[in-house]
Image 1: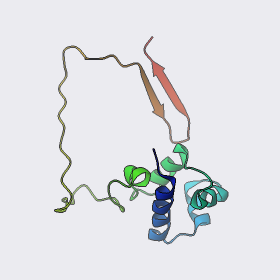
Image 2 (image 1 turned 180 degrees about the horizontal axis):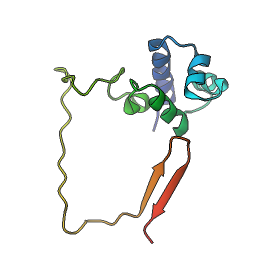
Image 3 (image 1 turned 60 degrees about the horizontal axis):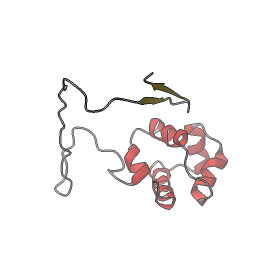
Amino acid sequence: MINNQEFTKRLEQVLKYYDLPAFVFADKIGVQRSSISHLLSGRNKPSLDFVMRVVSSFPEVDLYWLLYGKGSFPKRSESEAPTATQAPLPKETFEASPEPASKIEKIIIFYTDGSFKAYTDN
């Protein structure tokens, strides 16, 4: 669950980092100016569409950092080595198993325009 107050603080960090007033930020990500105001005041919670617009418009913003405060901002480049306080993420290997343990019930694909498509196994 997203902590709305913490999300607002991180959104303010993004605005400060890019030195953008809220109305310019809203124009850049293609949302109404009032939606930024409502988010910053705590009146509204961020929608998935809003979050995805921020992440796609500003590549330095990490999705998990914006939503949960995990990771870093601005996003570290792939070539940067982790610091002593940050352990590297384990590399997982996946092997194809002859028989899956469970069956996929539904796959949902979210598009950047806010629409989605659900596929179910019939």
